[in-house]
Each structure stands twice: as C-alpha cells, then as structure tokens.
Image (tube, rainbow, N blue to C red; front, side, top):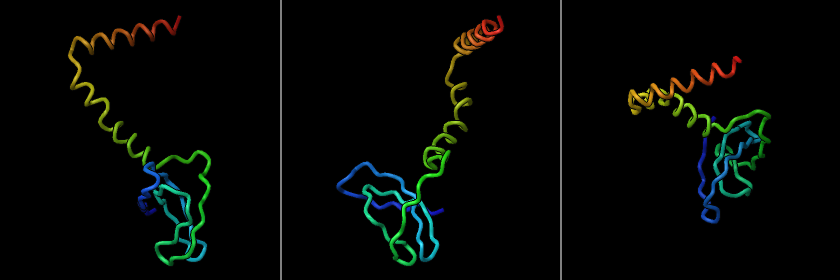
Length: 101
C-alpha cells in the first residue's frame, strides 16, 4: 500500500488518512495536514476517506515498535553493568516469589 506525503503549511501536525478511489480502485495511505478533498494519484478523480478498521494499527507506530523490539534487550544488556543486571534479576525473582504466596 503506497504512502503519499503532502505537506500542509497551515497545519504543521500531519495526519494519516486511508483513502480509496471509486473510479480506479486505488487505495493508499495519505499523510496530510488538512481534511481537504484529495485527488487520486493515478486517475486524478476525487477520493473517499476510508474509516479506520476496528483494531487497525497505525503502520508508522508499528514500524517504530518493531525497531525498538529488535534492538531493545540486546542494547540494554550491553549498557548495563554486571552489578545492575544482578540487582534487576534479584528484584524480578523476589516479585515472582511474592506473586506465588
């Protein structure tokens, strides 16, 4: 699904809108600052805003989450000292034992 960015000087906070063309069946994510009518990039017909699906995730946020998840544990382990890792592990073990009682 293509992502198109159209800057809006009046609104510095861009929004993500899913649009669909009723003429050529094009659909894509358009990053815009205003709710104005946008034309289809293929046939230049007016497009319709598609309502977000229930449970749909923002693709940009999902990509950032994956990036942090891929790096997270390894990068954190490299930065922490052995003493701090031991302290974290001890606190985790105590929390697990407290839950069982």
